[in-house]
Image 1: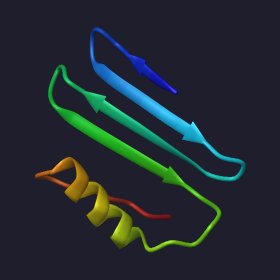
Image 2: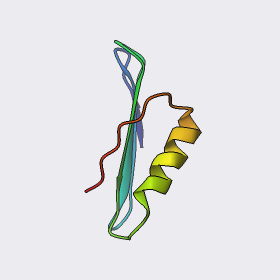
Image 3: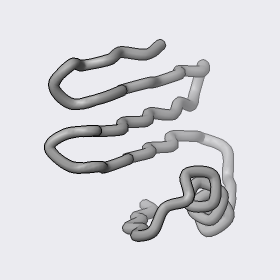
Length: 66
């Protein structure tokens, strides 16, 4: 599912039975992307961060795993 705001930018999300992912991309007031990944299955967060950074050609990354 996606949503486009004329004031800010895009939001998208997908939900699975026990997991999901959210994505937010602001165009205003400044360029900003945020990706949230929720899962009950174990995965390597460093691999997920590296993939996301590469995919979006991100210059600055802040990541938190818990």
